[in-house]
Image 1 (spheres, rainbow, N blue to C red):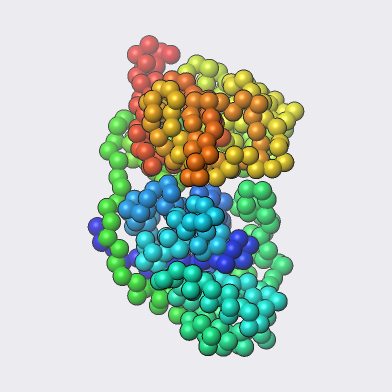
Image 2: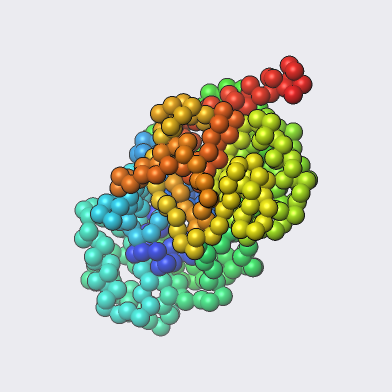
Length: 451
């Protein structure tokens, strides 16, 4: 299909330059105007889309070219797009799969979607040098795709001069600035920004940012820039229904990392997703399958441990063969313990904090055996990002990074997948199809035999 979807990409000179703050300010301001707005996040990050969707109310999805490739990414963009779409970049504008590659970078996404990039430059402590930074980004690739600049962490007094010098030296429009504001600072944690539910007064902070954006950013000009972009043509991915099944999905403060595309693919295949809380609920809902996503179980380990009824409910279900997918934090929950806190105990391993990132980054995961999600040799893309390690991380899959480094990971049986990797189902829909089929078989056995 062809669709006109207004769009810009918020790019950064590097991590920490203010991309998320700028994207949130713009999204909230556009929502406050009553406009039809959606947001996207480049890369595998879960947390920024949580800010966009849960706090601002702008539907959000990931755009990851390593996971999806160019054609599928265009289709997913059209599937989730609104009239106006703000795409938040990842890391620095040209940072891609490796130190030497721009593949899957924000620049690459900008080219694939013909989305003009607005470069966010932290100009604090700079004068003429900020023009050198902008000019360097313009010259790095041709075309650069950079259609404008927004200056961050500067004052209203210095802005007119910095705007003039950047426009004169670089020949690119400066669309405004945001001042440094401690009141709107978003706290950080090892997984990125803290989960949206945890930031004190976050909605008020977003409104403060939106008010500032209306004052110091030329939103009308940015809207016009978004609206004049050409139509995009792509096939929107839709899977055929396999069977009606019920899948319980852990959703609370401890388990909140899910790709929207994964959940929607399961629904397209016939799943009704039933949310439940391992923190608060006493038992699993009636279901044919279980999906335990990632999150922060280590921060709520005592509460998870003290919910004895839920732990017993999950252990009994997993041991009885309930088809179960457990990723990262969900995997940790199924082990015997996180640090000294007792967990479900369905997998014979325990987790400890390594105080550093362990086996992190993109990888393609291939199956070393047939199991719940995989036939022998099946491949799916995903990533790992964790500070905690299991004494036995498993060996059902082989992970291979784009750099060539590889390792064994994940526990798997005919009814279980559990490991640190976060899998992106649409990179190989057969993974989701097998999960649904196994859930359907479980349902049929229960209806036929009562167990």
